[in-house]
Length: 400
Image 1 (cartoon, rainbow, N blue to C red):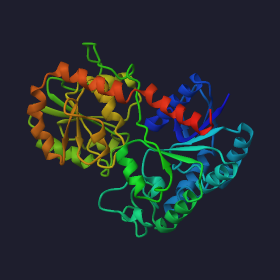
Image 2 (image 1 turned 90 degrees about the vertical axis):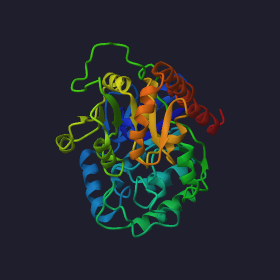
Image 3 (image 1 turned 45 degrees about the horizontal axis):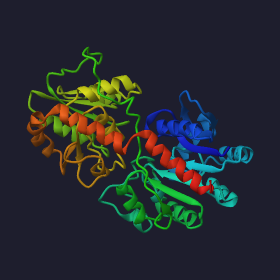
Image 4 (image 1 turned 180 degrees about the horizontal axis):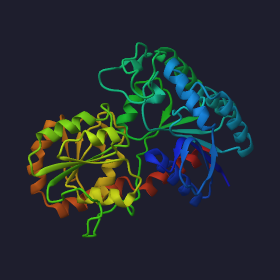
């Protein structure tokens, strides 16, 4: 029985954590032994988990990263111990997800994978692998194409006071130039085009979309209201993020709230305590939730979802809402363009255009649109179909 070992910062929490857990479970149904190594947080799992390092190690790595801009270059003891565990497990395939997060030394890991010639799959959930600092990039900076340096976003995750982005970029470029047994998996073609222009351009690539379980995310048919505080008689725009920042559209949602008429509202999920206190009257705020039942109701009862994140690499919340029958508004020239068509959503270039779409959305056939949205997700983004693509890739890599 072949062995799969995935590595991610978290397990069964957040978008990547749930993907890792579900992919691991699917691999087991396809005849693979399945392990997950993680560095920070793990909720209940059906797989064998391996903790890399400790909370104290994560804290020390984060402090060093803040003052030295050395994210991913600390945690040597924790990584050395983990690599000894790999020697015992002897995985046939190693699948990397988010290896940033202050818990592992990525040059040590890559050196080991190259030395042992272990087939390695890297799902590219963000941009961190191709930059000298940033996990997300914007259109105003293209230093990542040629070597970084003088980073304009040191205050963004992973925040740092010292700029080592040029040397960090060189380290990554050197590592990927000498990793022959790696397959890069961007989660959208949009992201893949960025990878093609980066230090990753020589790494073989296969796009596999993220997927969701459409039996979990489906239209909410119950009439009673369990989510309190939302006036569902108003036209409702839902916006969701794991954590709201200026970089992923927090200020854009506040701007949109100022443009809405009195019969409209925004439901905003993923806020922290300070953001909750500062909301205008026409935004109903919720903290981050892991409750699928709550999300299902919020998605289903909203009239449209709007994702203001210009740097989103896929848009998992967008397809979750669509699976619940809710159309989407996405930004042009983002990965969101791959998720919708004329039957399931709308494209805008700026926030002000969202308001112009409200009369159009009010006039559409909701039942017909809901069916089209759900069918789109079931056809292209069903989790089992996407996970099977990974299994097919694993089998190909080991010659099975």
